[in-house]
Figure 1: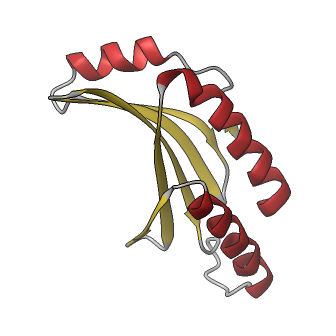
Figure 2 (figure 1 turned 120 degrees about the vertical axis):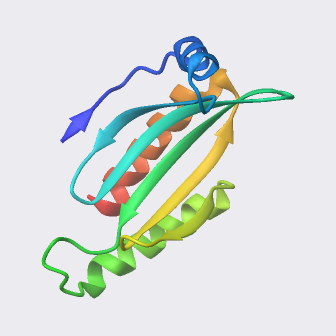
Length: 121
């Protein structure tokens, strides 16, 4: 498991401004079941910041675990109420993303980490 607890919005913004695609991304936490990251996008109106959660629907065994899927569904419903967009990805996972003000990134990340622990273990 990889976990980082501090988000530097100014650094994300600077990296995005200097990148070819005008986007930066920082991995904050990664387990077998999910990945959490934060990023910045530079667009003509300004810079926007986002938090992304990628949830794997199954482990490497490809066995269907209905209990795990029920927990994932509860977690996804909570994210949806928090205005996260949910997108099914080709590699058997769901991408969840929301934009937040730079000053709210750390608080939202801590909230997501708490939800992940209670909902997905």
